[in-house]
Length: 393
Image 1 (cartoon, rainbow, N blue to C red):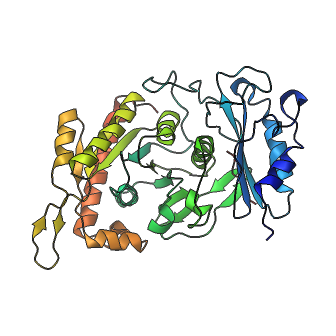
Image 2 (tube, one colour):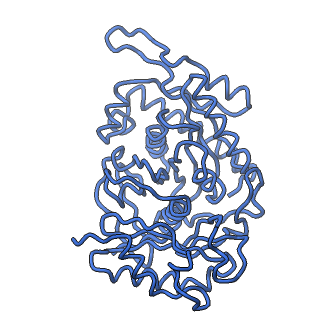
């Protein structure tokens, strides 16, 4: 395959006229950085939010001319919007990006660019067929959030629910390895993508779209746009719950997910030590500010049982997450031990809930899943609040 450079893509995009047919989108400064991977080109075009629908043909034209380049198999072209921009063609050059859906920028039920700490003005639209969306989050990386996410999803499935999982960690997607899934998703009709599947749960991840060794160097608008498409342009079918493995931390991507996705609740994962709990509090505060109910806290790597002696060691301390949950008044969902079994089965793509369903670790995850579902039903009973364009050929 012929290698395609960013300069080639930009040169071709100079043939696309800007808004009001004034100049071209590259020289007007409307095109983001271009990222090329595995024969696919990814970029966004900034437009005024109020003109998003009107200017979608411009996005389609950009997509078309890039796909005509020899060596380009597909294109992801998103419109990103600046709510504050004027309607003139050059007004969107310094945007505060807003994630689009279906290839066009919009403000998700009238709630674009809510300032941190401000609740949504209106309820966010749900995902057809999906009963509830649960975020699994952590204030920092390295606490076993993805391992917890996948075993929680499998435990919910083992408890009799229809489950899907969205891997929202663009920079470090884990689900292809954790669930031993390879290959590329198929486009089934229009822009709709068929999710991958294993162990009875449906899965979508950026890890299916780019090679494992590829470093993702996207900026905020591209990430936000890709996440919204993976959520809203995937044929999830009928699900009782969709588990979202959130990116670690509390940056722009995480806040956007919390604000734009109709989350029914969030599960916070932390290890017992004070430093991890400090970061976990940041995650709790983020969800509080955007009015997403916290379903509870999981203490991961809670303790270690030596396989040779049976002695217990509190390597990272013990009980910190339980105390934090009691302090702030949210449910404590359970303790997951630090075990070789969990680590080995996760690395092998055979999570412990499916590889050893009668083992102690699997029973722990199933108990946590039961508590999560109970909390979710309680929250929903109180009236809880109800994702660029990736193109496949």
